Length: 103
Image (cartoon, rainbow, N blue to C red):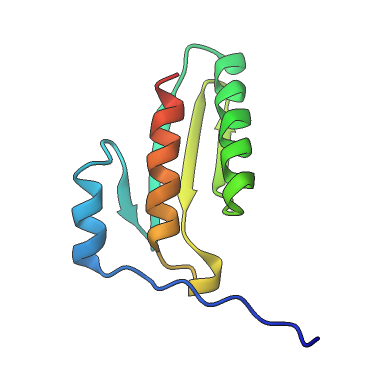
């Protein structure tokens, strides 16, 4: 059987992204990424958040950029198979990350 390449995700346009950002408080669209910085009380809470994100990301096979410095976690989302643009996959994962940040 011949290998089938997965279909490329469709990049969202500026209006679509801005519409979704209305419901994603604190997220911004910059440099072709959805970005947000989260602040926690300490390193342990920040790392727990990163761990929770990792399970969700792995389940949907869509992995964010994650930066951690003590109690701060910065997230960046875009879709590699769409040329590094924002797609619905990024919006969906940002919505899940928001839910996880409230735990």
